[in-house]
Image 1 (tube, one colour):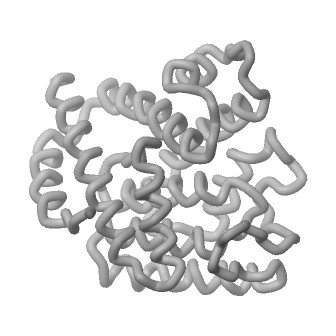
Image 2 (cartoon, helix red, strand yellow):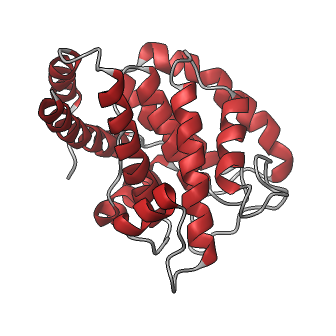
Image 3 (cartoon, helix red, strand yellow):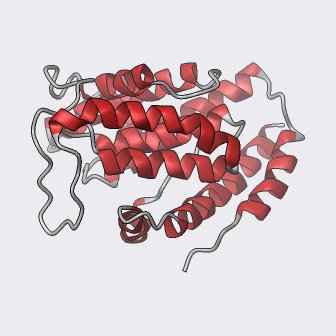
Length: 248
């Protein structure tokens, strides 16, 4: 059972903020570290077979791993490009629809350039799913509604709750033909960065808990997912604090 850890998160953020501003060299090292970590974990959650070391080699050295699918390499390269854009968008106050389309395009264009950054033209069919995702003709309106409600949620919510809601609401729309989970995790992290928090990864080892909590949000029960994300953020803060303490 995952608990609401927002109070603990606030306490730890105060400690982290005590080290800010970080020097440019330290900040660059941390950004590169999380490019590998976020790319690996987010892809692995979707079945990508590259491990952490292989992900690092593909991103940093541009090498191909023998015996691994081409698509796994393209997902890795694409996610790293989307991550770079994520850092650029972190200084903005809000998430825009163009931001979402850009992140998907960067992630997906080497895999399927025709559908990269464009809303799907087919209905979503998920075996065993008990949710009706919006039909293609509904997507433009659903996405406009999603973008319009984000400022209100941000104003009324703890930043971590807001980030979790961004993730959950976006996934429940499922606007793209593929890559929705990865874009959702990028958007969650964009929301965190824009609120002054650090990158948070969801380790593949907790995939079943992640999916279970996310499924509850399909029926407007957001508490399990918010609690889950709050624990992931707290774990990420602990790691981040250790990293910056060692670098001082």
